[in-house]
Length: 430
Ligand code: HAM
Image (cartoon, rainbow, N blue to C red; front, side, top):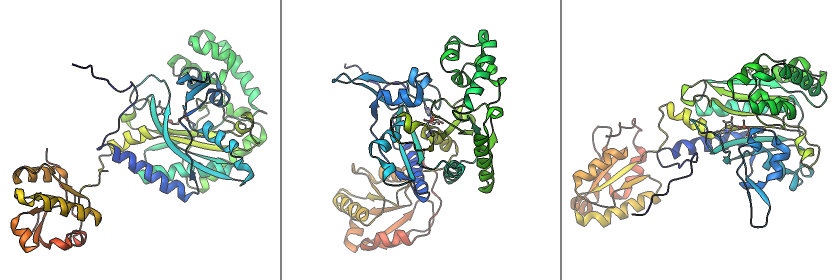
């Protein structure tokens, strides 16, 4: 017997039954982001490795440990994208978008790849929905993006999520904070994990997002970045909070929030859900301002701010909500005899063309087995087609949730089904 081949660890298949939740999240995002003026961009899944090294940062876990990097047949080092911000910025620069409009608002959705230790809500191929705004340095832009997320979560019906915000300062004030942080971390060097002892030398901020418990305890008692902000950064952060107040967005200031990517300046934020279904993977989205990235990638001096939501985690939360996302069939057509099979197939085809969602058992079989299937399908109505119906052109719509059958002419089934008031879906038969 041939050996079975399984999917790659940490990369999931999405099948009917679950995919409807994904489609709901994606279509909600498209509608909502569109309302805010964000247009969709699609960039390749593979980029030059240097793009992520120079933006996300060599010392981050994402670039240092988690990238899927390979050499192509031409000897180039390429990587599966671990995130969407750098590819979008690369595309923005490459297409000189700043010369076409002063402010651009983009969104994207799709798979990202990180070789992470897997657990609930943490995978090696996962999906993000993200948005980036280019060209506005004002705190109002940061607030608008947080508003996008808040309204997105509301539209999904996910309300138990807390917005955490912080400011990491800029090139002007961060060095003083760095110096203080290094001094503090050096005093606690022995308590840090081996990785962090190295990070301390090369990129001390990264110690603050180490997942090791001991390092987290050291980080928690460290210096507060907000006390080191220069006047313009402090004013930006204060104004952002005022604007969040104007929009009625609730948040908490968390001075320990640093995020796991190197490109941020000033504002950083995360949306954290408290549902146990996510375990430790409770951050459903995060983002921040990255005013220096474009220039660092050889592009124009254009400020930017953005976020990305973890689609897998949003879906986990929605699964817990117990809501139904699959659209149930309007009608199940069952055939009472062999001679009605072709007519049933034809009727199903016509009604689908007329816009109904129709289920029809192409295997035929006994009426009893078809009725069982009709029950399981969750269809609103069943129509039994037999010799009598074919000859008279009249049939009955049986409401699957119970109630009186509705007489119907075979040439006006779609209109009759549409005219019936929606009853709650019947519980699926086990
Ligand atoms: P990030 O925090 O690395 O930010 O990822 C954003 C979200 O993607 C996380 O909050 C989480 O929900 C989800 N996520 C990350 N890794 C995984 C994983 N292994 N499995 C499942 N979900 C995951 C970024 O990627 C930035 N590009 C966000 C951004 C956009 N900043 C500015 N603009």
